[in-house]
Length: 489
Picture 1 (cartoon, one colour):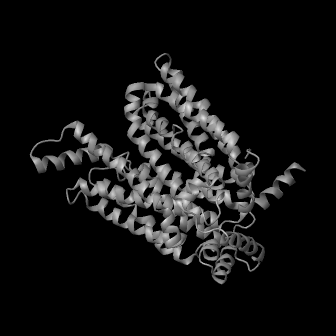
Picture 2: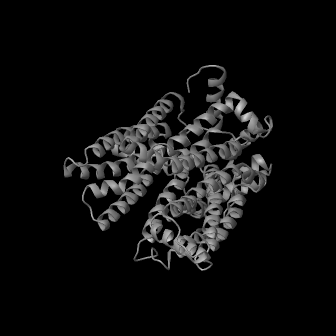
Picture 3: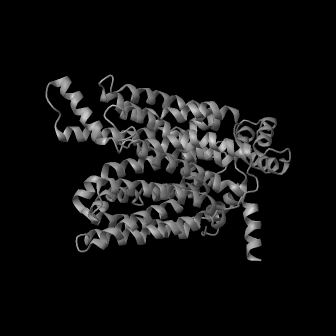
């Protein structure tokens, strides 16, 4: 009996997924999220090679070697300017989404990726690490725009029962591309003195794929109907995505949202901050974005090398452990794609954050006593993998699409711009501030993340609503009640 019920729910869960919708998801996600994840990970493995090339280039120019401190500073700029580009791109999400459309914005954004690919590919030949710095900033702009436009497009083409699962596709592709970038950076592949520019330049491949695939797919039906007032085009797009002519009910829901939107003009930055019915979901969106970046995931990954060494692993074994960690991240993100529609967004966020809190405290204890017994080192490796699993369960994927679920069409672009820009800003400050903090605090830096995680758990428990299976009208009514009536959400 229980097995039959499960089969029915699984059938209902996948209702609405078809080949055309799957193709549109692939065209959007692989061309966008792949860029994001690949450029997060590709710079790590060839770090020593890039620093050596920077030193050689500087020596050829000035007839003296670059100091180690200056070389580290230049590489830190190469790393951090990527986040600065992401902040800039994220802030432009609203403009691109409304001016060019969700699909149109994604297509135009590929120009940044192609320019960056050329800069990466020829920087070594031109003996210019300035080209590398500019390329990282340009690809950061691309990734910032992708992080806002792609989840918005995916959310707006998804049926209600698959909205969370399809939204999770962005993070799934992101984790896959991080893993691929780690593999491509291996010495027996592209992680060599002559081939590392090619490893960076491969970021142009997903752009070419999207430029070929996405034009086949329609623009977001919601954008066409609500923002452009083109009901015929919207119905044609929805019919293509659902692969059926029976779209009247969904068109009716979109028309209701369109009629409601006509009563309220496009939302400005000032209004989204001042209006309590908009400010509440904005604060929730920003907290979810900060929970993702300030959870300690970057710290755990950074300490992973030290943890592997303390367990007595060789360099090769440590590399295998890193790839295993990336593989586990992919598998759990794929699992969360299913779980997000069965258990809900709020539940998975709470499970993920709570697991990370317990894990980060145990990891802190293990780092304090890492020299006491060899078993502590091996237990630490398990904790690193568990931490990544907990992150992938909810905090890694949900914030990207959650902001698109909390806002109606008229406020969604502005809210996405703010949320994505805050996410990249938090990533920038973590990148700049973590190493100095680690130098001062050592393993005690994990206490900072434990406190932050506890705060995010409390906020999620008391303030974050469940959006699974709810229409945008139902979700916005929650915030109206919260702003003008019952304070509980």
